[in-house]
Image 1 (tube, rainbow, N blue to C red):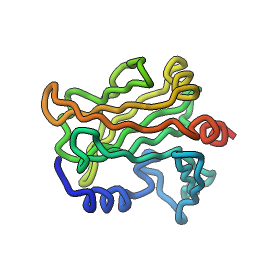
Image 2 (spheres, helix red, strand yellow):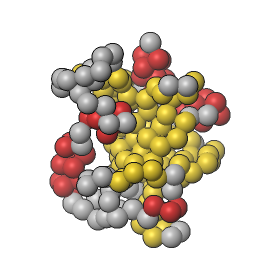
Image 3 (cartoon, rainbow, N blue to C red):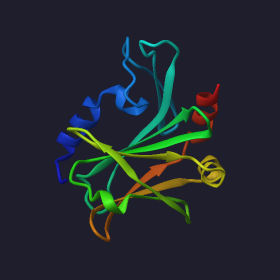
Image 4 (cartoon, rainbow, N blue to C red):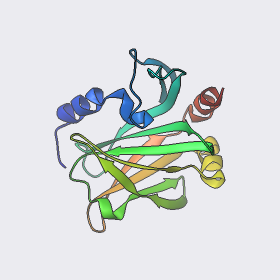
Length: 169
């Protein structure tokens, strides 16, 4: 999908908070705080408790009008949590999402759902990936618009370690 920066920002700003938390119905507006380049967003679902995620948005290096959102959240039975990538409609889903921290490449994330405004990929964060994210400088996420035609998005890991530690509390 190719869209203007203005429309992408509008789409990302309009994403229902529940998309980050597997469809939880929310009773109130989300709370947020910053940790470096990452924003911690928390909300209280109607079922009780508090649900939080670290979130960051970035635009493509190759096509600055194509953006992504990455969210890291705790998950039941997943020690390091879950990483979610929200990509625009029109993304070539069969390629999945490429993940690289600094110079180390990790397994691709599969897409699992598309809504009317975004497609989501998700997977557990393994020990190696978490270690690199906590100590690395950049997270490179690649989505594909056609087979083999990737668009790179660079997310700085500045503040990730502090935000992740706060997320685990």
